[in-house]
Image (cartoon, rainbow, N blue to C red; front, side):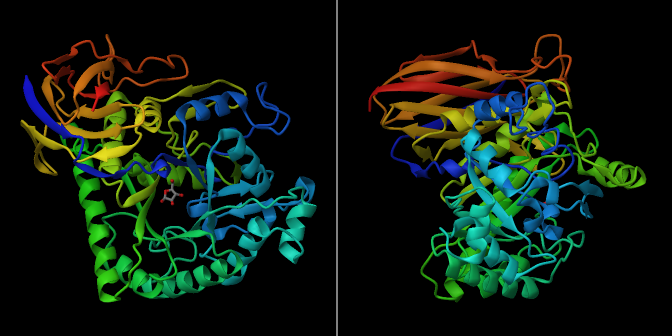
Length: 511
Ligand code: AHR
């Protein structure tokens, strides 16, 4: 049995839980849009072609903000192709994903869908093949009330009222050699600065995200952020981060420690942002938009799938990276959510990539059912329960040795305290594959505490760490009660199963 202790003090807080931390991402890629959220002709599609079974799962999962329309796709996209009468919209080649794009789904459809899903829209502009002019035109189309060329076109296309999109991404992964229209940091920094200026001249209320590094392993990581922000610090509000994790060579111990990498990545970007702030004598603070993160088997995509997709020729909505998530993957997703929450004072937006079918917590078959992957559960629980203030935890734990990260704590934790509801919630993973973890949570400054609910995601009976939710077994992995949890003399005692991500909810009756 491994052991761990978490000390919670309600006065040791990091900041408010940013609601935009629980975002997701819909890209025109594979089957995320077509036969994912949108499938006219599906028995459960509504009159707009939205799949109501998928929508119900999205609402249950609760993403607060959804990024659209890409991703790599946006760097070759003409947004005008996706507005106006559907019959008049051009069919185009999407070079990013070797796909035929019909444009049957575009901005208006996405706005309607997002409203139905109860999520804010985060719109990306194309700064790959396009620039300042198209970006400012799109802001005018979306946000200007009327009486101008672009805003009147929106009204003619059926949206009398402006869309009022607040959050905008200034392109996508332009540091990447794979990106259509990729740029050097200096080229992008100037383009981001000028695009931001022009977009804010159309609507000064918008918030802008500059492109950061596509991953921590990019050779330009650090210098890219520094150069881009040296140009555009005054004009932008956030810098983006992207990170995907996977298990290499059956090394589960290192995989289960990936939040150590995410913590270091975030802290590295904060250091760079703040260095530019200090050097430029800026007073405002630029924060982080972690607008792509997840578990993704990129080795399989790069070494096998990409070639298969190209060899299959130009097709509409081919299957691309429909990764199936195991119990292990879901526990890692839980630890990544913990890391984001621990940094909620600076990471103000985060988007799990993506929402449906493409490396997604929700799967949907064409003409068939939709179901929750294992990774649905940590997202849904944290999006629903993390409220109020983020707590700064003191953690002492037995160590687990890993190849990539050396010795790491056997647990990974985050917690929130909501004074209004009197609810304290602890999210905690046990990284050990074999051993239970004997956890004590010491509570300071919290008066009378009662256990409200404790549950866990772990290996189900008869399963193993690779067990997944498949079309035929959609409920194999889900949250189950954490039986061995109790409050004893004002402290919580819990036994965390091996390989698990748990949620412990407490009611504080007298703080
Ligand atoms: O989410 C899948 C892809 O990953 C996105 O299109 C791109 O931005 C990233 O490389």
